[in-house]
Length: 477
Image (cartoon, rainbow, N blue to C red; front, side):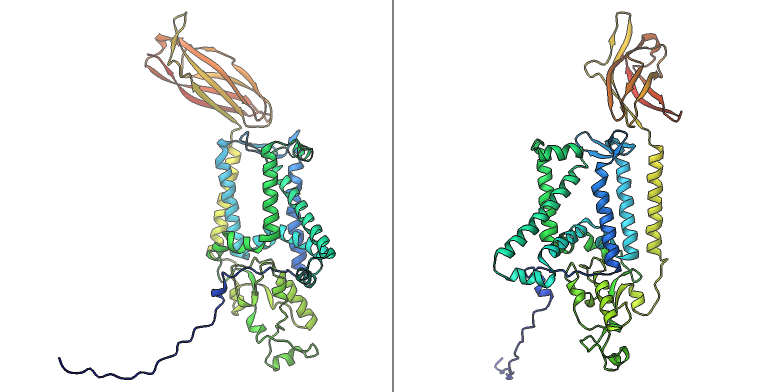
Protein backbone atom coordinates (compact mmCIF):
# COMPACT_ATOMS: atom_id res chain seq x y z
CA UNK A 1 0.00 0.00 0.00
CA UNK A 2 3.02 2.26 0.50
CA UNK A 3 4.22 1.74 -3.08
CA UNK A 4 4.30 5.04 -4.98
CA UNK A 5 2.59 5.27 -8.39
CA UNK A 6 5.00 6.57 -11.03
CA UNK A 7 4.02 9.90 -12.59
CA UNK A 8 4.81 10.78 -16.19
CA UNK A 9 5.00 14.35 -17.45
CA UNK A 10 2.73 14.92 -20.49
CA UNK A 11 3.02 17.91 -22.78
CA UNK A 12 -0.37 19.70 -22.96
CA UNK A 13 -2.15 19.48 -26.34
CA UNK A 14 -3.44 22.74 -27.76
CA UNK A 15 -7.06 22.39 -28.88
CA UNK A 16 -7.93 24.24 -32.08
CA UNK A 17 -11.50 25.42 -32.47
CA UNK A 18 -12.80 24.37 -35.91
CA UNK A 19 -13.76 27.05 -38.39
CA UNK A 20 -17.44 27.89 -38.69
CA UNK A 21 -19.05 25.63 -41.26
CA UNK A 22 -21.97 26.34 -43.56
CA UNK A 23 -24.22 24.26 -41.31
CA UNK A 24 -23.37 26.53 -38.37
CA UNK A 25 -24.51 29.52 -40.41
CA UNK A 26 -27.83 28.02 -41.46
CA UNK A 27 -29.67 30.00 -38.78
CA UNK A 28 -28.00 33.30 -39.64
CA UNK A 29 -30.20 36.23 -40.65
CA UNK A 30 -31.44 36.09 -44.19
CA UNK A 31 -29.74 38.17 -46.88
CA UNK A 32 -31.99 39.58 -49.54
CA UNK A 33 -31.71 37.85 -52.92
CA UNK A 34 -31.47 40.14 -55.93
CA UNK A 35 -32.57 37.96 -58.84
CA UNK A 36 -30.96 38.76 -62.16
CA UNK A 37 -33.06 38.72 -65.34
CA UNK A 38 -32.33 35.90 -67.75
CA UNK A 39 -33.36 35.10 -71.33
CA UNK A 40 -33.58 31.70 -72.95
CA UNK A 41 -35.88 28.93 -74.15
CA UNK A 42 -36.67 27.59 -70.68
CA UNK A 43 -37.39 31.07 -69.35
CA UNK A 44 -39.69 31.76 -72.31
CA UNK A 45 -41.49 28.45 -71.77
CA UNK A 46 -41.76 29.03 -68.02
CA UNK A 47 -43.28 32.48 -68.57
CA UNK A 48 -45.74 31.13 -71.13
CA UNK A 49 -46.69 28.25 -68.85
CA UNK A 50 -47.07 30.49 -65.80
CA UNK A 51 -49.08 33.18 -67.55
CA UNK A 52 -51.29 30.58 -69.24
CA UNK A 53 -52.43 29.23 -65.88
CA UNK A 54 -52.52 32.76 -64.48
CA UNK A 55 -54.91 33.68 -67.29
CA UNK A 56 -57.05 30.63 -66.51
CA UNK A 57 -57.14 31.65 -62.85
CA UNK A 58 -58.25 35.17 -63.76
CA UNK A 59 -60.81 34.25 -66.44
CA UNK A 60 -62.56 31.16 -65.04
CA UNK A 61 -64.65 32.91 -62.34
CA UNK A 62 -65.97 35.34 -64.98
CA UNK A 63 -67.27 32.59 -67.26
CA UNK A 64 -71.02 32.12 -67.43
CA UNK A 65 -72.79 28.81 -68.02
CA UNK A 66 -76.54 28.41 -68.50
CA UNK A 67 -77.25 31.77 -66.86
CA UNK A 68 -75.04 31.35 -63.79
CA UNK A 69 -71.38 31.61 -62.82
CA UNK A 70 -69.68 28.59 -64.37
CA UNK A 71 -67.43 27.88 -61.36
CA UNK A 72 -68.78 28.91 -57.97
CA UNK A 73 -67.67 27.19 -54.77
CA UNK A 74 -70.42 28.45 -52.48
CA UNK A 75 -69.35 27.38 -49.00
CA UNK A 76 -72.22 29.12 -47.22
CA UNK A 77 -74.80 27.24 -49.30
CA UNK A 78 -72.65 24.06 -49.20
CA UNK A 79 -72.85 23.81 -52.98
CA UNK A 80 -70.01 23.66 -55.51
CA UNK A 81 -71.02 24.47 -59.07
CA UNK A 82 -68.59 23.47 -61.84
CA UNK A 83 -70.26 24.17 -65.20
CA UNK A 84 -73.01 21.49 -65.52
CA UNK A 85 -71.91 19.66 -62.36
CA UNK A 86 -73.18 20.56 -58.91
CA UNK A 87 -71.44 18.98 -55.92
CA UNK A 88 -72.99 18.78 -52.46
CA UNK A 89 -71.61 17.59 -49.11
CA UNK A 90 -72.97 14.14 -50.04
CA UNK A 91 -70.49 14.13 -52.95
CA UNK A 92 -67.45 14.40 -50.69
CA UNK A 93 -66.05 11.16 -52.12
CA UNK A 94 -65.76 12.82 -55.54
CA UNK A 95 -63.74 15.65 -54.02
CA UNK A 96 -61.52 13.08 -52.28
CA UNK A 97 -60.93 11.29 -55.59
CA UNK A 98 -60.01 14.60 -57.26
CA UNK A 99 -57.40 15.29 -54.55
CA UNK A 100 -56.03 11.73 -54.81
CA UNK A 101 -55.71 12.02 -58.60
CA UNK A 102 -53.94 15.37 -58.21
CA UNK A 103 -51.56 13.91 -55.61
CA UNK A 104 -50.54 10.91 -57.71
CA UNK A 105 -50.19 13.10 -60.80
CA UNK A 106 -47.80 15.24 -58.78
CA UNK A 107 -45.89 12.17 -57.57
CA UNK A 108 -45.59 10.83 -61.12
CA UNK A 109 -44.34 14.12 -62.56
CA UNK A 110 -41.89 14.60 -59.67
CA UNK A 111 -40.44 11.12 -60.08
CA UNK A 112 -39.95 11.75 -63.78
CA UNK A 113 -38.88 15.40 -63.94
CA UNK A 114 -38.18 16.58 -60.40
CA UNK A 115 -39.76 19.70 -58.95
CA UNK A 116 -41.06 21.13 -62.22
CA UNK A 117 -44.35 21.91 -60.46
CA UNK A 118 -42.47 24.31 -58.20
CA UNK A 119 -40.51 25.93 -61.02
CA UNK A 120 -43.19 26.18 -63.69
CA UNK A 121 -46.69 26.00 -62.17
CA UNK A 122 -46.60 26.83 -58.47
CA UNK A 123 -48.54 30.06 -57.69
CA UNK A 124 -45.81 31.11 -55.25
CA UNK A 125 -43.21 30.99 -58.04
CA UNK A 126 -45.48 32.66 -60.59
CA UNK A 127 -46.39 35.58 -58.34
CA UNK A 128 -42.79 35.95 -57.16
CA UNK A 129 -41.58 36.34 -60.74
CA UNK A 130 -44.40 38.84 -61.42
CA UNK A 131 -43.23 40.94 -58.48
CA UNK A 132 -39.61 40.65 -59.64
CA UNK A 133 -40.71 41.85 -63.09
CA UNK A 134 -42.16 45.00 -61.52
CA UNK A 135 -38.91 45.48 -59.60
CA UNK A 136 -36.89 45.33 -62.81
CA UNK A 137 -39.15 47.71 -64.69
CA UNK A 138 -39.31 50.31 -61.91
CA UNK A 139 -35.95 50.04 -60.13
CA UNK A 140 -33.76 48.66 -62.91
CA UNK A 141 -31.48 45.66 -63.30
CA UNK A 142 -30.00 43.61 -60.47
CA UNK A 143 -26.94 45.85 -59.99
CA UNK A 144 -29.07 49.02 -60.08
CA UNK A 145 -31.43 47.60 -57.46
CA UNK A 146 -28.53 46.74 -55.19
CA UNK A 147 -27.07 50.23 -55.50
CA UNK A 148 -30.50 51.80 -55.02
CA UNK A 149 -30.97 49.98 -51.71
CA UNK A 150 -27.53 51.09 -50.52
CA UNK A 151 -28.32 54.76 -51.19
CA UNK A 152 -29.88 56.96 -48.54
CA UNK A 153 -33.48 57.93 -49.14
CA UNK A 154 -33.84 60.69 -51.73
CA UNK A 155 -36.57 61.79 -54.14
CA UNK A 156 -35.63 59.31 -56.86
CA UNK A 157 -35.48 56.38 -54.46
CA UNK A 158 -38.72 57.42 -52.74
CA UNK A 159 -40.83 57.57 -55.88
CA UNK A 160 -39.41 54.31 -57.24
CA UNK A 161 -40.07 52.47 -54.00
CA UNK A 162 -43.53 53.99 -53.71
CA UNK A 163 -44.45 53.07 -57.29
CA UNK A 164 -43.12 49.53 -56.84
CA UNK A 165 -45.07 48.86 -53.67
CA UNK A 166 -48.19 50.44 -55.15
CA UNK A 167 -47.95 48.05 -58.11
CA UNK A 168 -47.37 45.13 -55.74
CA UNK A 169 -50.43 46.01 -53.65
CA UNK A 170 -52.55 46.42 -56.80
CA UNK A 171 -51.53 42.96 -58.03
CA UNK A 172 -52.22 41.47 -54.60
CA UNK A 173 -55.64 43.14 -54.43
CA UNK A 174 -56.66 41.93 -57.89
CA UNK A 175 -55.41 38.45 -57.03
CA UNK A 176 -57.39 38.42 -53.80
CA UNK A 177 -60.59 39.70 -55.43
CA UNK A 178 -60.30 37.03 -58.12
CA UNK A 179 -59.65 34.28 -55.59
CA UNK A 180 -62.58 35.29 -53.36
CA UNK A 181 -64.66 35.46 -56.57
CA UNK A 182 -64.47 31.68 -56.75
CA UNK A 183 -66.52 31.51 -53.53
CA UNK A 184 -69.01 34.32 -54.07
CA UNK A 185 -70.50 35.84 -57.27
CA UNK A 186 -67.51 37.72 -58.64
CA UNK A 187 -69.34 40.44 -60.56
CA UNK A 188 -71.28 41.59 -57.53
CA UNK A 189 -68.15 41.26 -55.38
CA UNK A 190 -66.19 43.75 -57.50
CA UNK A 191 -69.11 46.20 -57.53
CA UNK A 192 -69.76 45.96 -53.80
CA UNK A 193 -66.09 46.13 -52.85
CA UNK A 194 -65.25 49.27 -54.83
CA UNK A 195 -68.53 50.98 -53.87
CA UNK A 196 -67.95 50.11 -50.17
CA UNK A 197 -71.14 48.05 -49.99
CA UNK A 198 -69.53 44.63 -49.41
CA UNK A 199 -70.31 42.67 -46.27
CA UNK A 200 -67.89 42.16 -43.40
CA UNK A 201 -66.73 38.66 -44.36
CA UNK A 202 -66.26 39.59 -48.01
CA UNK A 203 -64.11 42.61 -47.08
CA UNK A 204 -62.20 40.62 -44.47
CA UNK A 205 -61.48 37.79 -46.94
CA UNK A 206 -60.29 40.17 -49.66
CA UNK A 207 -58.01 42.12 -47.32
CA UNK A 208 -56.69 38.94 -45.68
CA UNK A 209 -55.67 37.33 -48.97
CA UNK A 210 -54.29 40.66 -50.20
CA UNK A 211 -51.93 40.79 -47.23
CA UNK A 212 -51.00 37.12 -47.72
CA UNK A 213 -50.24 37.58 -51.44
CA UNK A 214 -48.26 40.76 -50.83
CA UNK A 215 -46.27 39.23 -47.97
CA UNK A 216 -45.52 35.97 -49.78
CA UNK A 217 -44.48 37.40 -53.16
CA UNK A 218 -42.85 40.62 -51.95
CA UNK A 219 -40.96 39.52 -48.85
CA UNK A 220 -41.10 35.81 -48.04
CA UNK A 221 -40.40 34.55 -51.57
CA UNK A 222 -37.81 31.77 -51.29
CA UNK A 223 -38.55 31.32 -47.55
CA UNK A 224 -41.91 29.84 -48.53
CA UNK A 225 -40.09 27.28 -50.72
CA UNK A 226 -37.21 26.47 -48.39
CA UNK A 227 -38.78 26.60 -44.92
CA UNK A 228 -42.59 26.47 -45.11
CA UNK A 229 -43.70 24.42 -48.10
CA UNK A 230 -43.69 20.71 -47.08
CA UNK A 231 -43.21 19.61 -50.68
CA UNK A 232 -39.56 20.68 -50.59
CA UNK A 233 -39.02 18.29 -47.68
CA UNK A 234 -40.56 15.08 -48.92
CA UNK A 235 -39.49 15.41 -52.56
CA UNK A 236 -36.42 13.26 -51.94
CA UNK A 237 -38.65 10.26 -51.28
CA UNK A 238 -39.75 10.40 -54.93
CA UNK A 239 -36.35 11.06 -56.52
CA UNK A 240 -34.14 8.31 -57.87
CA UNK A 241 -31.02 8.15 -60.03
CA UNK A 242 -33.14 8.42 -63.20
CA UNK A 243 -35.11 11.53 -62.18
CA UNK A 244 -34.50 14.53 -64.40
CA UNK A 245 -33.31 17.48 -62.33
CA UNK A 246 -31.37 20.66 -62.97
CA UNK A 247 -27.77 19.50 -62.48
CA UNK A 248 -24.22 20.73 -63.00
CA UNK A 249 -21.79 18.46 -64.86
CA UNK A 250 -18.78 18.66 -62.54
CA UNK A 251 -16.68 16.30 -64.69
CA UNK A 252 -16.92 18.77 -67.54
CA UNK A 253 -16.94 22.01 -65.54
CA UNK A 254 -14.06 21.51 -63.10
CA UNK A 255 -11.57 22.97 -62.58
CA UNK A 256 -13.53 26.19 -62.85
CA UNK A 257 -11.97 29.59 -63.25
CA UNK A 258 -11.73 32.69 -65.47
CA UNK A 259 -9.86 32.59 -68.77
CA UNK A 260 -9.46 34.88 -71.81
CA UNK A 261 -12.08 34.39 -74.52
CA UNK A 262 -9.39 34.10 -77.20
CA UNK A 263 -8.42 30.64 -75.92
CA UNK A 264 -10.00 27.77 -77.80
CA UNK A 265 -11.90 24.99 -76.08
CA UNK A 266 -8.97 22.61 -76.54
CA UNK A 267 -6.44 25.12 -75.22
CA UNK A 268 -8.53 25.60 -72.09
CA UNK A 269 -8.50 21.88 -71.42
CA UNK A 270 -4.75 21.72 -71.99
CA UNK A 271 -4.33 24.26 -69.18
CA UNK A 272 -6.28 21.98 -66.85
CA UNK A 273 -9.41 24.15 -66.75
CA UNK A 274 -12.96 22.95 -67.16
CA UNK A 275 -15.78 24.68 -69.04
CA UNK A 276 -17.06 26.63 -66.02
CA UNK A 277 -15.62 30.16 -66.09
CA UNK A 278 -16.88 30.85 -62.53
CA UNK A 279 -18.97 33.84 -63.63
CA UNK A 280 -21.59 33.12 -60.92
CA UNK A 281 -24.48 33.96 -63.26
CA UNK A 282 -26.13 30.68 -62.30
CA UNK A 283 -26.26 31.94 -58.70
CA UNK A 284 -27.42 35.45 -59.61
CA UNK A 285 -30.44 34.24 -61.62
CA UNK A 286 -31.55 31.65 -59.04
CA UNK A 287 -34.74 32.74 -57.22
CA UNK A 288 -33.72 30.77 -54.12
CA UNK A 289 -30.10 31.97 -54.16
CA UNK A 290 -28.36 28.59 -54.29
CA UNK A 291 -25.26 27.52 -56.22
CA UNK A 292 -26.30 24.59 -58.41
CA UNK A 293 -22.63 23.64 -58.72
CA UNK A 294 -22.76 22.34 -55.15
CA UNK A 295 -25.00 19.47 -56.26
CA UNK A 296 -28.66 18.62 -55.71
CA UNK A 297 -30.21 20.77 -52.96
CA UNK A 298 -33.71 20.78 -51.55
CA UNK A 299 -33.95 24.55 -52.21
CA UNK A 300 -33.75 23.99 -55.99
CA UNK A 301 -37.19 24.43 -57.59
CA UNK A 302 -36.16 23.25 -61.08
CA UNK A 303 -37.12 26.52 -62.73
CA UNK A 304 -34.24 26.19 -65.21
CA UNK A 305 -33.08 29.82 -64.90
CA UNK A 306 -29.48 28.70 -64.31
CA UNK A 307 -29.68 26.47 -67.40
CA UNK A 308 -30.51 29.44 -69.65
CA UNK A 309 -27.88 31.63 -67.98
CA UNK A 310 -25.14 29.02 -68.36
CA UNK A 311 -26.08 28.18 -71.95
CA UNK A 312 -25.83 31.88 -72.79
CA UNK A 313 -22.31 32.00 -71.35
CA UNK A 314 -21.34 28.82 -73.21
CA UNK A 315 -22.54 30.41 -76.46
CA UNK A 316 -20.41 33.50 -75.88
CA UNK A 317 -17.35 31.42 -75.02
CA UNK A 318 -17.86 29.07 -77.97
CA UNK A 319 -18.29 26.02 -75.75
CA UNK A 320 -20.94 23.29 -76.10
CA UNK A 321 -24.17 23.91 -74.21
CA UNK A 322 -25.38 21.69 -71.39
CA UNK A 323 -22.88 22.35 -68.62
CA UNK A 324 -25.99 22.89 -66.50
CA UNK A 325 -29.01 21.01 -67.83
CA UNK A 326 -32.05 18.91 -67.05
CA UNK A 327 -30.41 15.52 -66.68
CA UNK A 328 -30.35 12.52 -64.38
CA UNK A 329 -27.77 11.31 -61.91
CA UNK A 330 -27.42 8.20 -64.04
CA UNK A 331 -26.41 10.26 -67.10
CA UNK A 332 -24.00 12.40 -65.10
CA UNK A 333 -22.19 9.26 -64.00
CA UNK A 334 -21.86 8.11 -67.61
CA UNK A 335 -24.86 5.77 -67.75
CA UNK A 336 -28.20 5.94 -69.53
CA UNK A 337 -31.48 7.13 -68.06
CA UNK A 338 -34.09 4.40 -67.59
CA UNK A 339 -37.49 5.83 -68.44
CA UNK A 340 -39.44 2.69 -67.53
CA UNK A 341 -38.70 1.81 -63.91
CA UNK A 342 -40.84 0.22 -61.19
CA UNK A 343 -41.57 3.35 -59.14
CA UNK A 344 -42.53 5.47 -62.14
CA UNK A 345 -44.68 2.71 -63.64
CA UNK A 346 -46.29 2.16 -60.24
CA UNK A 347 -47.26 5.81 -59.87
CA UNK A 348 -48.63 5.80 -63.43
CA UNK A 349 -50.72 2.66 -62.85
CA UNK A 350 -52.15 4.00 -59.57
CA UNK A 351 -52.86 7.32 -61.31
CA UNK A 352 -54.80 5.52 -64.07
CA UNK A 353 -56.74 3.51 -61.48
CA UNK A 354 -57.66 6.66 -59.54
CA UNK A 355 -58.75 8.42 -62.75
CA UNK A 356 -60.85 5.38 -63.61
CA UNK A 357 -62.50 5.38 -60.18
CA UNK A 358 -63.17 9.10 -60.41
CA UNK A 359 -64.70 8.70 -63.88
CA UNK A 360 -66.82 5.75 -62.73
CA UNK A 361 -68.12 7.72 -59.73
CA UNK A 362 -69.01 10.63 -61.97
CA UNK A 363 -70.79 8.35 -64.46
CA UNK A 364 -72.73 6.47 -61.78
CA UNK A 365 -73.59 9.58 -59.81
CA UNK A 366 -77.36 9.97 -59.42
CA UNK A 367 -78.33 13.67 -59.59
CA UNK A 368 -81.01 13.15 -56.94
CA UNK A 369 -80.95 12.89 -53.16
CA UNK A 370 -83.92 11.91 -50.95
CA UNK A 371 -84.10 12.17 -47.18
CA UNK A 372 -86.96 10.93 -44.97
CA UNK A 373 -87.34 12.34 -41.46
CA UNK A 374 -89.91 10.81 -39.13
CA UNK A 375 -92.10 13.00 -36.96
CA UNK A 376 -90.55 12.91 -33.48
CA UNK A 377 -93.66 14.11 -31.63
CA UNK A 378 -95.56 10.84 -32.02
CA UNK A 379 -94.72 7.35 -33.23
CA UNK A 380 -98.13 6.97 -34.88
CA UNK A 381 -101.71 8.17 -34.54
CA UNK A 382 -105.15 6.83 -35.35
CA UNK A 383 -107.27 8.84 -37.77
CA UNK A 384 -111.04 9.40 -37.56
CA UNK A 385 -111.43 6.67 -40.18
CA UNK A 386 -109.67 4.15 -37.95
CA UNK A 387 -106.47 4.10 -40.01
CA UNK A 388 -102.98 4.02 -38.56
CA UNK A 389 -101.04 7.10 -39.72
CA UNK A 390 -97.32 7.96 -39.67
CA UNK A 391 -96.07 11.46 -40.41
CA UNK A 392 -92.79 12.19 -42.22
CA UNK A 393 -90.88 15.12 -43.65
CA UNK A 394 -89.81 14.40 -47.22
CA UNK A 395 -86.77 16.26 -48.60
CA UNK A 396 -85.93 16.06 -52.31
CA UNK A 397 -82.57 17.46 -53.44
CA UNK A 398 -82.24 18.13 -57.17
CA UNK A 399 -78.45 17.80 -57.64
CA UNK A 400 -78.64 18.75 -61.31
CA UNK A 401 -78.96 22.24 -62.74
CA UNK A 402 -82.24 21.56 -64.58
CA UNK A 403 -85.77 21.79 -63.20
CA UNK A 404 -87.46 18.38 -62.86
CA UNK A 405 -90.85 17.10 -61.76
CA UNK A 406 -90.63 14.09 -59.44
CA UNK A 407 -93.31 11.48 -58.72
CA UNK A 408 -93.58 10.03 -55.20
CA UNK A 409 -94.91 6.64 -54.14
CA UNK A 410 -94.59 4.27 -51.21
CA UNK A 411 -93.42 0.64 -51.52
CA UNK A 412 -93.86 -2.19 -49.03
CA UNK A 413 -97.21 -1.13 -47.57
CA UNK A 414 -100.48 -2.52 -49.00
CA UNK A 415 -103.60 -0.40 -49.45
CA UNK A 416 -101.98 2.77 -48.11
CA UNK A 417 -103.33 6.30 -48.25
CA UNK A 418 -100.80 8.99 -49.13
CA UNK A 419 -101.61 12.42 -47.76
CA UNK A 420 -99.54 15.02 -49.62
CA UNK A 421 -98.43 15.87 -53.15
CA UNK A 422 -97.56 12.86 -55.27
CA UNK A 423 -95.73 15.10 -57.77
CA UNK A 424 -93.36 17.94 -56.91
CA UNK A 425 -91.34 20.28 -59.12
CA UNK A 426 -87.84 21.17 -57.90
CA UNK A 427 -85.52 23.72 -59.49
CA UNK A 428 -81.94 22.79 -60.31
CA UNK A 429 -79.67 22.85 -57.29
CA UNK A 430 -82.58 23.32 -54.88
CA UNK A 431 -83.97 21.36 -51.91
CA UNK A 432 -87.72 20.78 -51.70
CA UNK A 433 -89.15 19.93 -48.30
CA UNK A 434 -92.75 19.02 -47.41
CA UNK A 435 -94.65 17.08 -44.69
CA UNK A 436 -96.40 13.92 -45.84
CA UNK A 437 -98.49 11.27 -44.14
CA UNK A 438 -98.92 7.59 -44.86
CA UNK A 439 -101.96 5.75 -43.48
CA UNK A 440 -103.22 2.18 -43.72
CA UNK A 441 -105.65 -0.18 -42.02
CA UNK A 442 -104.32 -1.91 -38.91
CA UNK A 443 -105.28 -5.30 -40.40
CA UNK A 444 -102.60 -4.75 -43.09
CA UNK A 445 -99.88 -4.58 -40.45
CA UNK A 446 -98.49 -7.89 -39.24
CA UNK A 447 -95.65 -6.44 -37.12
CA UNK A 448 -95.25 -3.34 -34.93
CA UNK A 449 -92.50 -2.16 -37.28
CA UNK A 450 -92.91 -2.42 -41.05
CA UNK A 451 -90.07 -1.65 -43.44
CA UNK A 452 -91.25 0.62 -46.24
CA UNK A 453 -89.58 2.68 -48.97
CA UNK A 454 -90.30 6.05 -50.51
CA UNK A 455 -89.59 5.96 -54.25
CA UNK A 456 -88.92 9.31 -55.92
CA UNK A 457 -88.43 9.18 -59.69
CA UNK A 458 -88.29 11.33 -62.80
CA UNK A 459 -87.26 11.15 -66.46
CA UNK A 460 -84.24 13.20 -67.49
CA UNK A 461 -83.64 15.02 -70.77
CA UNK A 462 -82.11 11.87 -72.31
CA UNK A 463 -85.25 9.84 -71.64
CA UNK A 464 -83.61 7.80 -68.85
CA UNK A 465 -85.38 7.16 -65.57
CA UNK A 466 -83.72 8.58 -62.48
CA UNK A 467 -85.00 7.26 -59.18
CA UNK A 468 -84.07 6.89 -55.53
CA UNK A 469 -85.64 4.43 -53.07
CA UNK A 470 -85.15 5.65 -49.52
CA UNK A 471 -85.99 3.15 -46.72
CA UNK A 472 -87.79 4.10 -43.53
CA UNK A 473 -90.09 2.50 -40.96
CA UNK A 474 -93.86 2.48 -40.47
CA UNK A 475 -94.63 2.10 -36.75
CA UNK A 476 -97.72 0.71 -35.01
CA UNK A 477 -98.14 0.02 -31.26
